[in-house]
Figure 1 (cartoon, rainbow, N blue to C red):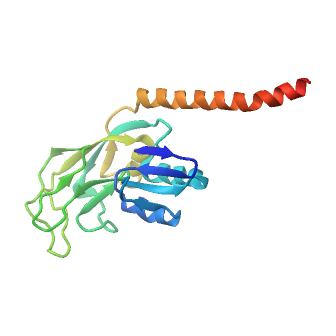
Figure 2 (cartoon, rainbow, N blue to C red; figure 1 turned 120 degrees about the vertical axis):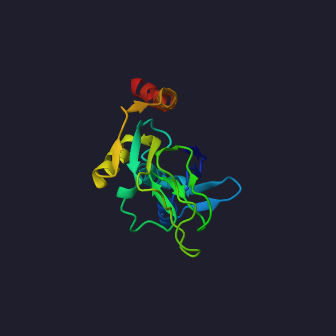
Figure 3 (cartoon, one colour; figure 1 turned 90 degrees about the vertical axis):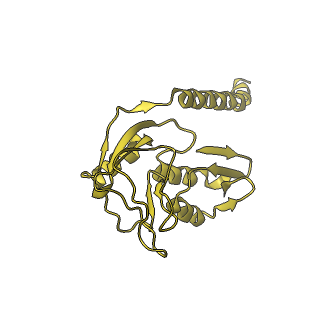
Length: 197
């Protein structure tokens, strides 16, 4: 995820999520095809960041702990999910675009066991069809989202690694905070001097 800010806009580049798109529209977000980003009024920054944390488990600026998750596909409750799509953790993990198309995996997904069927569903309603022993792993899942998914689907999802944090992201966050502190000190300096006079 990448966040860019100007004086008037906050621009979000993230993995595609049908939930994010629907919620972004509620915040008057506009799709910017040239930039391939969702653009929001900077005045709504706090709401946008809260939405990003809800959907993606991160807000693009604060480093988060991540884990690896194992999913037993046969134990997932597919009701309420779009046909031919497995969307979790703010990502489209698996997708079959048409009945006879191959299943597309997100870059963070590994097949541990089992296989996908050569076709699934119907021409109008494709679905991800797999062998009964199909297990996938998903890398770099924000810990908060992994814990919620494991609680919601205890038979299907489990956390299989220790939490880790991206040190580079943490250093970048620290640098931004130090810059902001310097800006605040500069703004406060005239006020401190005038009190002394």
